[in-house]
Length: 232
Ligand code: CDP
Image (cartoon, rainbow, N blue to C red; front, side, top):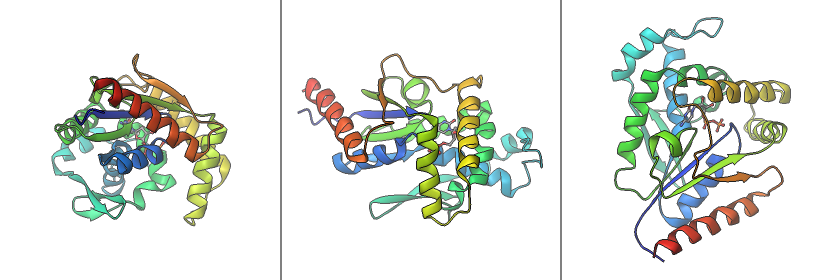
């Protein structure tokens, strides 16, 4: 097997299990894991806290664009996982709330926001050895990534998983609310002008609707082995 490090891009629909599999793969092979969605979520939290999101959910994009130089996002490694830091403050729990989920896609559709975050993401991948998950990693951030996966599952399965995850964390949310959020984000993510969600031509499709976590991890590891083995 080649010891040369590669870039691994994992894209897909909301709550399709990307983050879980990307994190696990990164831990197994000793790569850095970056959750690009957490970065869009952190920018959204900043906008919410600074009154840049109106009652109807409209985003004051001019104010947010002007504030971009003041928004610093980082990840702090903690045990096996990592904590998203917004201007030095840990915000991991807050950015996973349904409130942030309901505002993130319009924020992520603002071209200037995307340019700023894509620049940071490319810097993080400069020395390779990285697994990054998101919506545009294989198409825009790292079009030359050696391994690309595109993840999907039936919307009802994805909503069930997210419902279980949030309920276990004690959040008071209904399955219906989550399903509506999953469908709404998918639609905004796929139809936005700036780098819409789509499968890269050279990405391998994974539909994990009927897969267990272990089956999904084995599938990913096999793909990784075949790609890095072929490069030796
Ligand atoms: O909740 P889930 O894991 O599905 O989403 P996420 O990965 O945390 O991303 C949250 C939102 O950020 C997405 O619905 C997209 O609107 C946006 N996003 C994006 O536009 N580009 C990325 N590379 C990652 C996320």
